Image 1 (cartoon, rainbow, N blue to C red):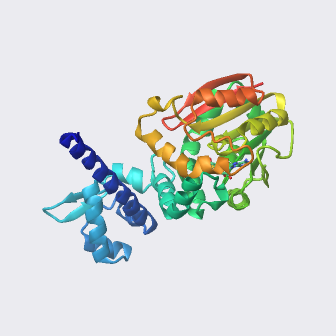
Image 2 (spheres, rainbow, N blue to C red; image 1 turned 90 degrees about the horizontal axis):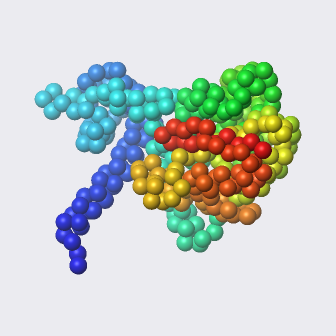
Image 3 (cartoon, rainbow, N blue to C red; image 1 turned 30 degrees about the vertical axis):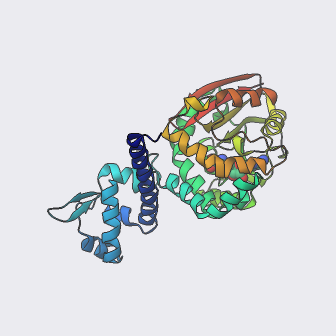
Length: 350
Ligand SMILES: C[S@@+](CC[C@H](N)C(=O)[O-])C[C@H]1O[C@@H](n2cnc3c(N)ncnc32)[C@H](O)[C@@H]1O
């Protein structure tokens, strides 16, 4: 029998989710139109004053500000009819490059709504969908979403958490970043370890093009990029190999790990950064996992199923499954070196 109270509660939750989905779109519009940046530090403003400041249409701004005020994305003072972006809201919505800025996160979700027809088709077919068939917005969003976390953690926390790696790379050595995407992690390592050389590889040619441009814009020279798969990239005698949020996207993660093992020096270290997750669904009943399981349904699992083997690890594989993949690929010593609220960092050695 239908429990009326439970029905009302669930309906309320669903309405909240619809409101949240619309908030993401409003936030993205504000991001792309530069409204949050214009409001950051500007104090309380009427819609008309904001229109003057931004050159945007006052009527659209009033509607947009109203949506944002109800969402709690801006503050509203009814007495003066003024809107304010607080420092906390600005940190999440306006301050590009800060680890807490979530615009890249929002953009990743919107990139999935953009391709909703394709997502339904893939889901119903049970077939894979290559990474290259995501919207271009998805590639930029992935980079934008992950980059601040890498900037805050990679050199300061993750590499120092590995046994002897920081000292080794400061002295020199060869680094390979596998599935490097737009190359933010690759460029960071090249900048931070000027005595080392860094190779970034990815099988998605447009991403490698973007990565090369990023390195050229940053003026780093101890870096190179190649279009190659994780299972057959060129080169050997690497001191340090790493994969950032990409192992679970691969069709043959065990084959990739095996190839990485062969390309590393015998005493080299492999660092695997993956989305944080417990080993079982029951341990993952939280909003971060909800987001990752969803993105995994439309991006990661289809990307893996579209490749040879089609292992389908999923973005919430958990440490046990990841360790089994690393063991099967030839790394006998695996430990969780460190973690953040969104990522776990595994250190693997032969
Ligand atoms: C979620 S993105 C992460 C990109 C980048 N590491 C980052 O953190 O921004 C996953 C990346 O894995 C790459 N990828 C997936 N399967 C691959 C394979 N078998 N060989 C090489 N790259 C692969 C995709 O092209 C994509 O750039």
